[in-house]
Image 1 (cartoon, rainbow, N blue to C red):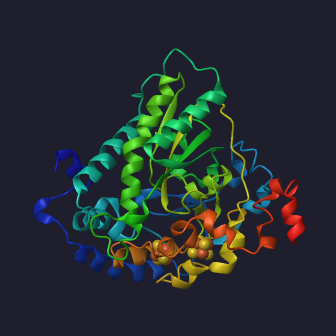
Image 2 (cartoon, protein in one colour):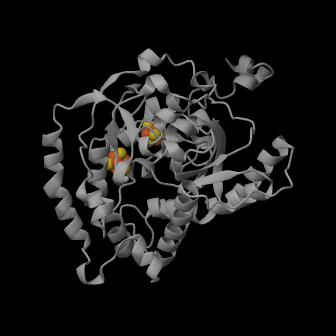
Image 3 (cartoon, rainbow, N blue to C red):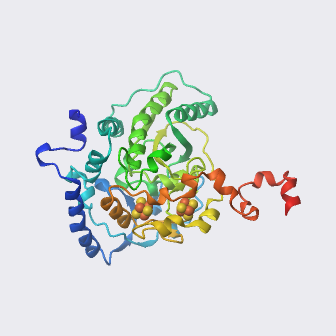
Length: 391
Ligand code: SF4
Ligand code: SF4
């Protein structure tokens, strides 16, 4: 294992915790977290400080984004008092300061090619941090590709070659950017890239020997995102690759970019692979065309399914959506979810049982009665005489 890989996880070989050690620490602290924040109600602003979700004051009235698809939201409505999740500080098992942590330990125990995974995560992370926080950013080519339509097509083509199956472009919505990351968001236009986790990897759950699904996705996002960014610079445009980590709330941006719709467990279902993917992104200094949100009729199917909600081992998934930070959406209880992550090496039960993610959207959507497929084939309805003849 290289020195770089070790430093990413701060390994101290003589003081290395085992998986059971971190599980024990998790159990010791989680009840304290609930106790300490039992009555904590405050206005929320998304934050990802120290590798975990926290909430700061919501300065929603000062949002500066100019996303054409979200500006209709009434800012008074957005300034909601929302019950805080019980996360006053990082759960120790996930705390960056307490490495070797759970994830590092989990990877050591379960992944055959762990050194390669960590290498990609480390080298990509270092480069992204350097470009986000210093002037050490590669200069774009002086030969600008002025055809922005072609530029977008070429970016998508290259990203697909690397394995990003779902790609969309939207404006940054700063309500869903970690508060301490605001200054790093150099450009308002964001290309979101979703990397597929193969079915074979997912099918290993709940025995994730040889590869954990999450780290398969994260390490491949890490491996390729800078290569897409280099291509964009070669086309004459400045850009910044962003991490696959949680500083940007990707699901809400992905839905906004027309990549899919919210699932019952609150993340974005794509027609390509459902939720069997991990996201990363690139902020680009070019006015490439934005993608519009689309209705894939996924809620219609989810409302009849709810397999994820019924099978979640921690009851972390609510059955119904609620108003959350100004939008109607679903919010999985993170603390319960991480509890399952900590106790089971990895939890992807909600994806593993999901028909859209595992069987495929094209097959699943046909299982709906024709009447309920109305928004799927709306464009076809005008000319599809067979539909009217059959109904
Ligand atoms: S398991 Fe069913 S309800 Fe849950 S996200 Fe998948 S399709 Fe929707
Ligand atoms: S990852 Fe596991 S615990 Fe978390 S929401 Fe999905 S099924 Fe529930």
